[in-house]
Length: 140
Image 1 (cartoon, rainbow, N blue to C red):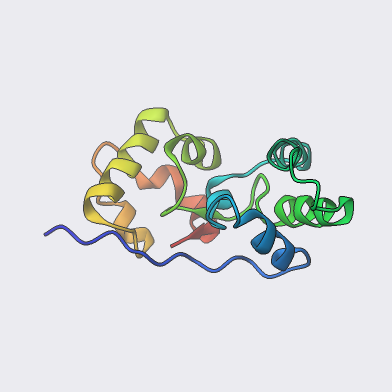
Image 2 (cartoon, one colour; image 1 turned 45 degrees about the vertical axis):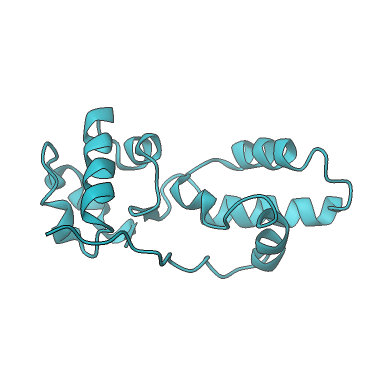
């Protein structure tokens, strides 16, 4: 039986800069866009600078708030949003092969969002034992 793809997303993590991030960045893309990323502060700074280069109304302080929020909440070793992350982001965050990451995304696309770690065990061509140590960081 094929489950419908879930339209719900985990909420944005709370913290300083959340409201600024949501209000500024949501003008161009979904606020869930960073859910698959685990970037360093420098990577976030480069991306925010790139994205806001033609937004003169966004102040230096707002840009700094957004960068700080992203760097704290979407960093290497942070939460892994299994239902939102792209295959390349899963490959990096879970330290698995590209083929395994693609298998997770393909399964998710057909069967719908994962609800539990047990659901990951159903993905063909993927051994969930490889990520057992990371299961407490996975967000469903």
